[in-house]
Length: 358
Image (tube, rainbow, N blue to C red; front, top):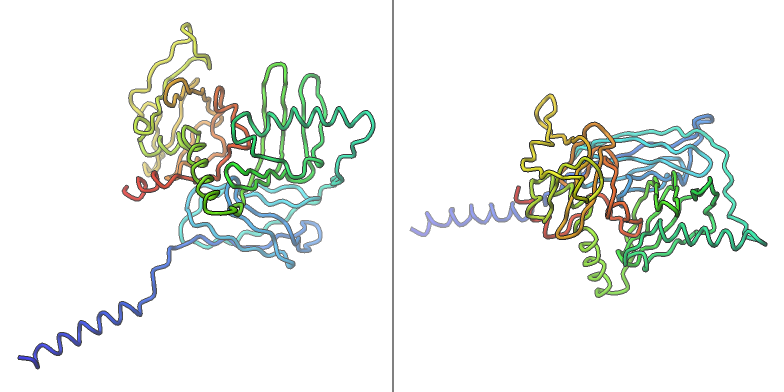
C-alpha cells in the first residue's frame, strides 16, 4: 500500500518544486528607442528631451544621441522631441502592448535667444504686472493654483497685441505643483489672454515628473487631491463615455444649439449614446462625433459646453482621445488652469477596479 502512495507524493513534490522555480510572469511593456541628431550635420544632440505629452513617460538623449523609453499602457500618445536651438518635432502614435519601436529624429536648427528677461527701470513694473496677470490665468483660479509656483518665471516674455496679452518662452516653463505632487515641464507654444473679454487661449506640451513627498501623510494628501481634481474633469468624462458609465459617474449630456444656459437656447438630452457613436470601417473601433455643442453636466450646477475640433475622435480604455484636445471647452472646463492638470491615463484606484472587471 505504502509503495503505491510514495510515487504519488514524489510526483506532487516535483510539480510544486517546478512551480516555485518557474519565473514570475512579467507584464509586457512597450519599448521605444532611437537616436536624435542634427538634421544638417548628423551630429548627436545629447540632452534633447523626448517625451509623451501629458504623461510621466520621457527621458533625455545620451551623449551619443540615443534614448530608450518604456510605456506600460497601450493607446494613443503624442510624442514631443525638443532642445533649445532646434525646431520642435511633434508626432502622434498608437502604441501596442509588447511591441518595440525604433524612432530616429533629425532636428532642424533654429536660432533662438535663450537669455533671461532683463527687468530694469520702467520695464520692471510693467513686466511684473504682466507676470501677475499671466500667472493668475495660466495656473487657474482653483485651490490648486495657490500651491503652485513657476520655477523659471524670468524666462517668460510678454507683449501686447492691442488688448491681448501674449506670452512666450525660449525654454520650457517649469511649474512646481505642491497640491498634486507633480513637476510640470511645459513647452509654451502659444498664449493669449484678453482681460476685457476674459478670453484665454493657450497651447502647451507638458510632461510630468513625480515629486517626492516629505512623508506618508503628504503622499496620502496628494492622492486625495488628485482624485478630487479628476472628479468631473474632461478626462473623467471621456473615461465614463468610453465605458458607458455617464450616469454612474454623475454626468449628463445634452445637445445644445449655443453655449449658453438660458431658456431661449434650449437643450435636448442625449438619450442614447448611439446618437454620437460611429463605427469605423472595420467595425472594431467606436468613434464619437456631434454637431453644434454638447452641454456636459456633472452633479448639480457644474456644466461646460464642448464643440468638436476634429470630425471624429476615439477613446481608449484610459479615457485618452486619439486626438489631443478633441474639443473646445466653454464654461467650467475653460477655466481650468495648468495647476489642475493630471497625467494622461491617470485613473483613481476605484475606477481601475472597474476597468479590470471588463
